[in-house]
Amino acid sequence: MPNESGFVPRELRVDVVELAIAGLTATPKTLPAKLFYDAEGCRLFYRITELPEYYLTRTETALLRSLGRSLLPDGLHDAALVEFGGSDETKARFLLDLRDGSGEPVFNTYVSVDVAETALTELRQRLAVSHSYLKTVPIVADFMAPLDLPALDGDRLGFFPGSTIGNLDPGAAVEFLQASRDSLGPNSWFLLGADLRKPPEILLPAYNDSEGETAEFNLNLLRRLNREAGADFDLRQFRHQAIWNADAGRIEMHLISARDQTVHVGGQAIRIAREESIHTENSYKFTPRIIRDIAAAAGWDLHRSWTDAANYFGIFLLRYA
Image (tube, rainbow, N blue to C red):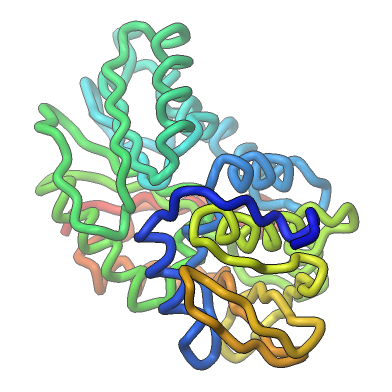
């Protein structure tokens, strides 16, 4: 195979092979978004968050910075912060650095749940230096799977920033919030970041940037399959596409085949037609009412919410109902 395919024979990962074959033999073809986040995928995504078109991160970060202690429920102290999908502590730091009325840190424990093991190891090393008082507990796991958290004394606040909730179909979003509610337990709280609906001319450039970083991020998924699932994708034969699906209220990312071709994954041949799509990601956009309804279906009450001045992004504080 040519070098551009990214094909490097290595020991196969059975879980990746199974996920890939299940998605690529479905109709229509799909690949789960969690496969984006190998080490290179994480690196590319962090670069995307710094692009001028990608308003989500800078808008949410500005909210976290400006709102500070007002984001937390009254009386929260000696608490555990549990971040779902947190391979990097950048946003969590806005909460971890907060102090209570006596000047003590609000949070004494930080639990970060993510599939990126290397990133979690590096996170723990950084926090051991910057927050030496903090008990840091990385958990290598898919936050959508059943999760047993360590015993957590005192108050508990779940944290799910970045509008990652938008990558879940509505039913899966409810299931995730139900599962997180069960994991956190009675009297817990949950801080949720969600991207809000706005005109497509604002939404689409965030997923189809002028520098091609999002395209590279999308194509890197195939490169990962070449490495971990014994696949032989030629990346030159696919192009990135982002569209706004108004009926579903979501941005969709696809990889479009440039020609009729046969690829192999884990030894299985898979036919892909010219212009056929592999659907790689959804990013649902919300209204405050939709967030309230999803939360209620999962057993949470919407306690407070905040948006930026342009109503681009919202942060929602949920309370265990």
